[in-house]
Length: 233
Image (cartoon, rainbow, N blue to C red; front, side, top):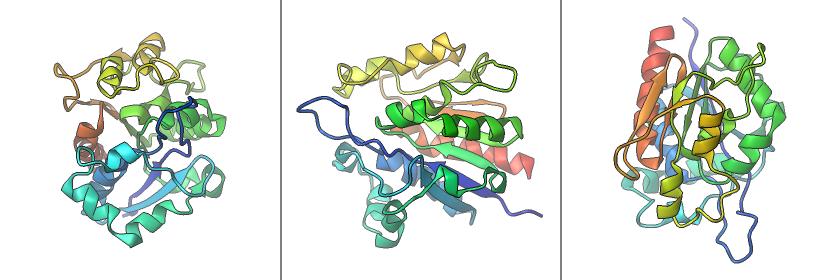
């Protein structure tokens, strides 16, 4: 039986493009929580980025509110963190080698994930080939502009979620984000849902498309993704 393999995309973008605003980047737990679930099952993973190279990490995700015990363990693991020092780029991989495509979040993803044509082509090919596409929080920004071969948006008519615009206010960055991701997904035809509570855990599965609302949903998103994968192998 073919051994499963997962492709994880993380952002290269490191700022809000505003003066006097703290840098952004990858929200670390959205990578580590997903990674932990698949690592425990012995499933191979590759972490890449649109451009390759060193990955910026949002300092807020390293605060006492963002750095839970499991993520802290990974952050203090030099072997794991070395995976983020010189990532491969999209052009360095063959999408056919993978069974799952996962987009980790962090506000940086609102820029490079949303506007990378090669990333969108990769997503379209994997989805149309029956691969699993999964994303959490701002990682869902990768899906908003992906069009399938029939010309329709991938997310049209699909159930899903992302970091809510209301929660951007709680995070203190509503006036800095480049657009309202929640609104854009709805305009593209996503059947959007969210937790009843601000920053509440919420994951949506629609066939082989799995999306999580926020960092608190990363583990659940990974678990749901793994469940779908186990049904296909």
